[in-house]
Amino acid sequence: MGHKCKCLIVDDHPIFRKGIRNLLSQEAACTAIVEADCAATALAAIRREPWDLLILDVALPDKHGLEVLKEVKLLRPKLPVLMLSLYPEREFALRAFKAGASAYLTKDGPPSELLSAVKEVVAGRRYITGSLADQLMDFLDSGQPATPHAILSDREMEVLRLLGQGKRPSQIADEMALSVKTISTYRARLLEKLGLQSTAQLVRYAIEHRLTT
Image 1 (cartoon, rainbow, N blue to C red):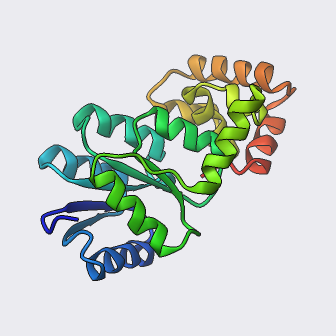
Image 2: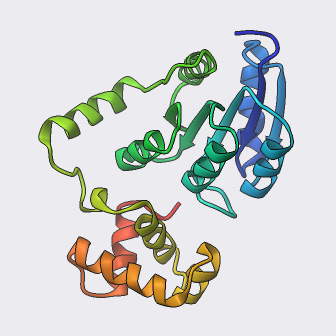
């Protein structure tokens, strides 16, 4: 790892950011490290100057990590992005890689795995854990969606996630910069695709499948 590696860590938990910062510094993986606690701060930093690595949490207070990833790839297409999540949800991993992520790790993994991932993605390669690779291979071999929500579009997933947080259609419309009518259309699609009958069932589905972060 070169000594000039410049890394931006984006996570809303200060202790977790500090832990990653200390790990990367101690191992001389990245010596120029900056922290951000939300999507807005991170995107401003990315617009302002170039980076060698972005470590991005999936769950941020102001915007979902996958949406941030898409914006980052428009701003800096070649910037390696390592996604972090509390949950080993393979559909999120698939969506992250499809959107341009270089690696997808869960926060309960060992520090050595993070260091290995950083080394690989900064070198221009993708990194995938052995356990996730096995899950994805099983998914590909089966030819069937692992869960009903695997067939949802990214926008439908976002609406489902926000419904699971208990937000009203008007709130979701404001957050996604869409009309309430459009959100209602997405809700109808969700009901149809997931075979559910009500918003309450959608909320329960999102919570049970841990899709609310």
